[in-house]
Each structure stands twice: as C-alpha cells, then as structure tokens.
Image (cartoon, rainbow, N blue to C red; front, side, top):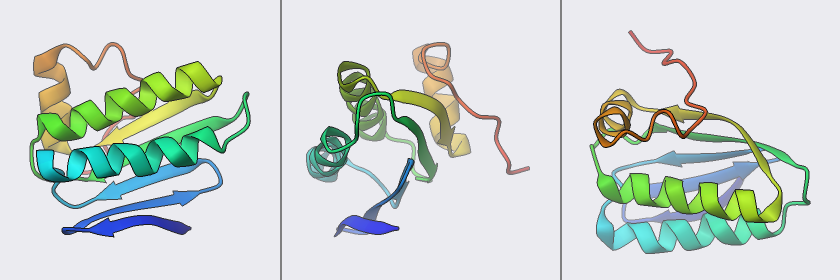
Length: 112
C-alpha cells in the first residue's frame, strides 16, 4: 500500500485497486483527503475497478460522505468502476438517513 495522506489523525492509503481511509474525517481534513484521493484516481486507467474502504472512519461525518461522493463522481468521469464501498456502521447509518445507500455499491458490514 502507498500512503497518500497522513495528517490530523486521518490516513489515506492506496493499493492497486483500493483506497482505504482511517481516522475521524472532519471538515478541516475533507478537502485534503478529497484532493489526495482524486489525484490518485486521476492516475488510474479508464476501465479500472476500485474498492473504497471507509470502514475505519468511526465518527459520523457528513464531511466523510462528501469526500466519498466526490471520489464517486471523479471515478465515473474517469471511467473507473467502483465495485464496492465499505463503510463503518456510523457512516452506513448516515448514508441510509441521507438516502445515499441506494446510489452506492455498499458492501455488507463485516462487523457484528
């Protein structure tokens, strides 16, 4: 994995077909996180497949959702297929309340 961002307790790591976010994403970090992930996405070839993993984001945050939506938009424009999105339980609840769960390929939670 490549470390793309490690600031303010938030980490963004990338592997060949995956972006992993951990930490509490607030509005102070959202722009930096979105930018780092978007730059990585811009380097991926059209037709790539991707998994977004935000299961390590435990604090409920609309900032984290805005980053996720930005990456989804950038992926679509670049021709990158998002196969699955993994969310922490708090983020999963927030996406459901916001009605976004039907727009994302949300993977089933592995935590109990």
